[in-house]
Image (tube, rainbow, N blue to C red; front, side, top):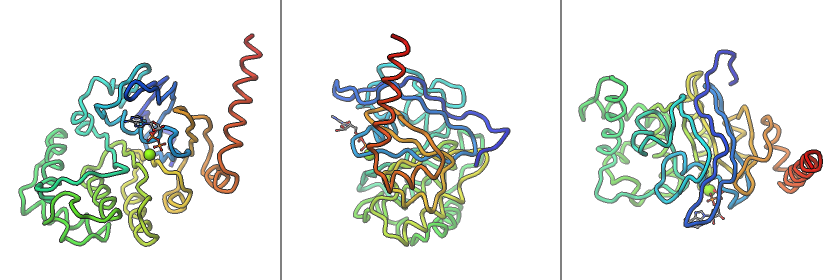
Length: 268
Ligand code: ADP
Ligand code: MG
């Protein structure tokens, strides 16, 4: 929702980033205020996951230009784990399996780390068990998943739910969900969307990365952005997602190129 007294949580200006020496993000601007839900759409390979990973601090990606402020603080001065503790959360497109690390211990450790940072009470294993089971109910997840290794042998949809469970526990300020809808059947999609909607408040913000419109029927965005070749080339309201669904992306690209050409001829 767009609130009058919202504050800027994330401010990205002129962001450029590369991986293996290849430029992927090219002059990307993006602003997120508290209370808002954003959707970033775009064809495969447009740089959506790269953007998400750069924000999270993935070591393979090099920031070559631009700034990102997170609650006014230079995000790039923070290590990935410090970003997480400060309230930045990324649900991965491809969550990794961590055999040998119990899901319950992992979740409790991450939860307690963030609680400590916030000066709040940490939970012992028994207290945490009650707490996490409540959160799992929200996502209609079986408590059996607590006793297994993190994501090990989980189906695609189960991994996605486990990501959203982490989000529910950590209550991040800014959550980026990278293709959380992919691999979910329609029932799981509804459950996950319901969970995400319950987590959306006037104080936090959610950024959904997706190339399907379908998720946006359940989590309604305030803004829809189109990404192409590493930059945001159009921003609209929720209806833009429907238009993309019916008309594809080419017209947005043509419109952007036309506007860029016109700007060049004016300045020439
Ligand atoms: P999206 O999430 O929008 O599908 P990505 O951010 O995954 O797009 O990828 C953007 C571009 O960056 C693609 O052309 C992809 O091949 C390239 N890319 C991503 N990661 C790497 C990597 N580790 N090495 C080389 N190219 C990469
Ligand atoms: Mg991707």
